[in-house]
Amino acid sequence: MMLFGKISQQLCGLKKLPWSCDCRNFWGWLNAVFNKVDHERIRDVGPDRAASEWLLRCGAMVRYHGQERWQKDYNNLPTGPLDKYKIQAIDATDSCIMSFGFDHLETSSICC
Image (cartoon, rainbow, N blue to C red; front, side, top):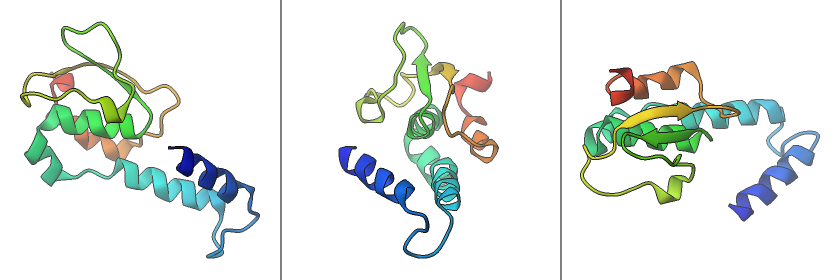
């Protein structure tokens, strides 16, 4: 993460990116990539795990049924049976989630 932070600081400090596009366009593109729905991933790991991955990638927090603490770190997502961790609540404050990423929630337990 330190490497990405250094790179992002350097990119934001440039007036023009090396490939001559606006820095705002770069961040918009990156946010769109983070929000892209991967239906194959949803099939492979289940809707709640895929939704959790999406939300955490975008800087949101997730709380699961039966747990008091909020999951904040993508790299520390709980492992175990796919149906064990059901999303109970989402805190998307200051996250980069976009409306077209909401398809991640379509089949997750948070919609029920």
